[in-house]
Image 1 (spheres, rainbow, N blue to C red):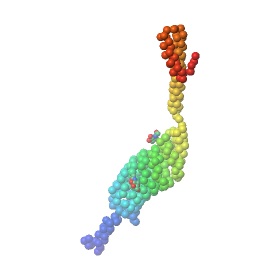
Image 2: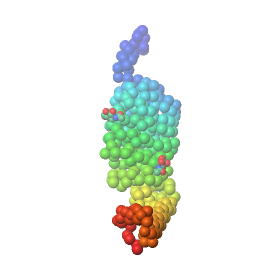
Image 3: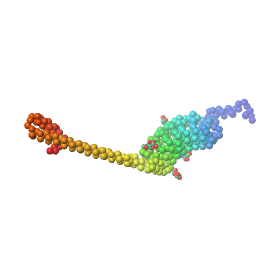
Image 4: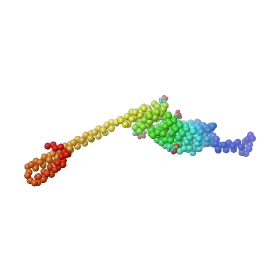
Length: 314
Ligand SMILES: *[C@@H]1O[C@H](CO)[C@@H](O)[C@H](O)[C@H]1NC(C)=O
Ligand SMILES: *[C@@H]1O[C@H](CO)[C@@H](O)[C@H](O)[C@H]1NC(C)=O
Ligand SMILES: *[C@@H]1O[C@H](CO)[C@@H](O)[C@H](O)[C@H]1NC(C)=O
Ligand SMILES: *[C@@H]1O[C@H](CO)[C@@H](O)[C@H](O)[C@H]1NC(C)=O
């Protein structure tokens, strides 16, 4: 072959140059064409090197990738579609997606996610579809998680370990259309009330509506969470537990007892006062000495000043 015989084949130089400029190398085992890279099901245990820099769609699904390196991912500034479904990814950090801010579609379903840092998605303001379903070890989401994903329309949270959600996490998702919530062990306690009210007023379509049910408390087990708003409101706002009734009873009794004691004390005072009053006028009647007159005047003046306070009984 005449092409291969030269010391530095021109075509090789050319393609190497193109590779540097446009990043058109393709990872081993993957298929690359028209800004689309598919590494689906290639038994990868880590993020593949050499993903072309102009890639717009990247399929990494059905591998054993444990970690998404922010540095490598960040080189793909045109990436709009990232499919990481069915891998072993354990966590997503605040900076994981910082470089891929054009992302429209992100699938992290069927992984081993234990945590999603609060600001992981904070630059993804173009994100339309996010799937984090089938991550049974994911136990909570921060209320900041979706603060900036204001384009989100489809959010799949099925089959995770989520027990509760903060309704304020959803307040910036004004374009959200579909929210999947089934298969989670929802704990319908009073903290959950605001979220269930949000589900009622937000007019979201939740396709799996009736399959998203409360697991706790026993009273509400099996209730669809989209219908749990009213019973929860009753339970949390108007309904009193028997303990509360006991408390009210105790308060009532205390008020009654205090009233009784007060009435008794008042009565005692009145009687003592009357006795003293009567005794003083009797002694004054039978005695003509000046001393007695003085003492009588003292009692008299006391009686005058106390006249408004106590009705004259005798
Ligand atoms: C949300 O996005 C805006 C602009 O898109 C940016 O200024 C702000 O810092 C982002 N918030 C967070 C928490 O990253
Ligand atoms: C999310 O991922 C699961 C599992 O990979 C899939 O079954 C489901 O259809 C996806 N949800 C959406 C809204 O595409
Ligand atoms: C409701 O349950 C959640 C999740 O277990 C918990 O974080 C929260 O403190 C509970 N709230 C109340 C009022 O018990
Ligand atoms: C609800 O759950 C049942 C039983 O698990 C399943 O057959 C049905 O397809 C589910 N419906 C939706 C809308 O997810």
